[in-house]
Image 1 (cartoon, rainbow, N blue to C red):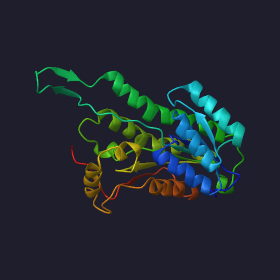
Image 2 (cartoon, rainbow, N blue to C red):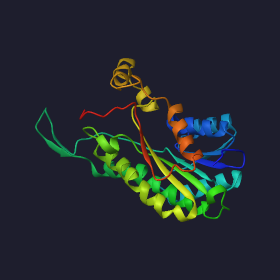
Image 3 (cartoon, rainbow, N blue to C red):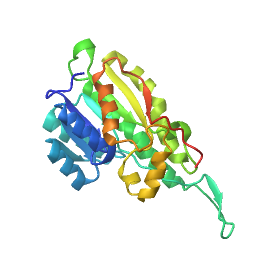
Length: 260
């Protein structure tokens, strides 16, 4: 798919980090970009910068997602591109004993469900609603109607201590990639997923410098954190290369995460 002014795109989590980098890259290639996010101030700033539109969207809500797509499509027309970057994380052991008083607790189930609802169900909600819209479009070259890129994580394959909820949610994104690509193959909609490693996201950039340096040094090569622009580069390749379909690709400098 050639990214140009006739192509509309939606990027969830597009107000910062990987999503913002992707929104900027798509816009630089000529696409009309809508940003879905809950961070209104940051989202509007990025949208203004790239000549796009900001939609305040909570991916856990059908009504909010529907309203977001309605606003985006009203501004740019039906999207042919969807990039899912919205996501959250937390850390808690499945069950643990306090070193102070010996008390025992388990992973808070509401906290577990919160991560799964945003990272997994929220991603699928946006895919399903976007794909339904793409089905209304005329096919391009090779019968293509759209391209979808999702964000999992290396934690989907080698999650660390305390990452049960995060790894489960990202493992779900990984696991549903091929089935969804198969669901949509007769309609000309491609689906791929990126598994990022350690990147310069707002979460990691908020850590002390020495911690960031240590994390970067743990990467086999290059020995640094990944740049959001590198994620955007791979996402763009997945969109533009018509033979890229049903794949899940690690983007991690060859790192394999240790238990902690």
